[in-house]
Length: 361
Image (cartoon, rainbow, N blue to C red; front, side):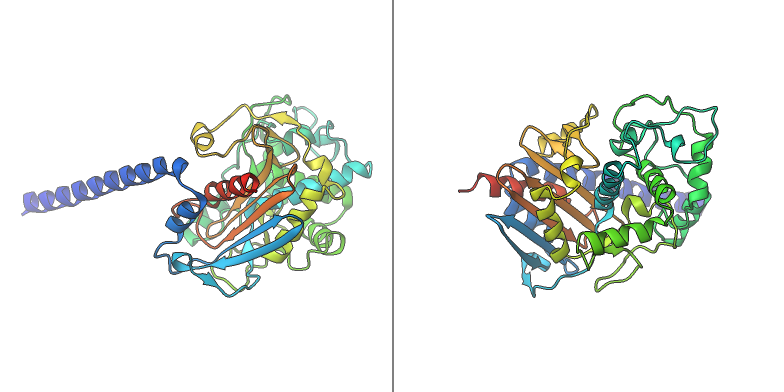
């Protein structure tokens, strides 16, 4: 009897393994086709038979903004400014607050963070510049007990990570204090949020919401409260430290306005777009597909080969991508309620769309 059970289990395991290998091979075949696909082809593949898709694509060209909303099989839906999580595009807003603080004389880019945070004096710390450009030596994040609990509860990984935990890690973590290789760091932008809180004496959520609504006029953009007209938004607790790395929600009207501000280099955004560091950690597969990461400014990624500036964002169930070509004053925004891992990511078909728009007459 035991031998029969073992044979059955072995057979099931073998079938699963073969299935997984087949799936991986299929995905690789599809991804290898991607460099030769047009925007229309890659977008159609992403939405094919996808009954839950609500993807909004905005375009700014020749001084005018427009958008369309797409659903299953690329079918056009009613034009509505749906509420999306924009994930790491939040970092561009945190960087803008830092740029404003620099202009006000509150921060120096080359100052170490212990000038603004109460930290032990026996350790080396990175500069504001290094945090902005992901060259601080800090990892993407550091595992804390709440993250483990969040995983089993099906929550946002960063839910419940408080300022005190970030400060403790800063106090116990040794870095060189010198510029390190580029390593994308949510933790680094959580630290920048702490710096902003300390120099302004206000919680980050209040700072950012005021900036977005009062200074930029983005009335539909704010730190998420876990709700909107779509489904599966991340939950956050008030005062969570990683809010400054990826907790903003927005809609296409506001994001097209935000795109125009970038193209016009309004206010502090001109400073944000200037190259601060070369990126020496290049993803060859991404470059093969047209996504270049040559340099970085204040959060913004610079594709110097094509003359594009861009940033993307992804949460558990949403994607966002904003990219523009300053010379032709052309740009795009993609807001999607699809998981970043679902078929073709927005960044990949988004860059194709921008290239086609810039190259069209």
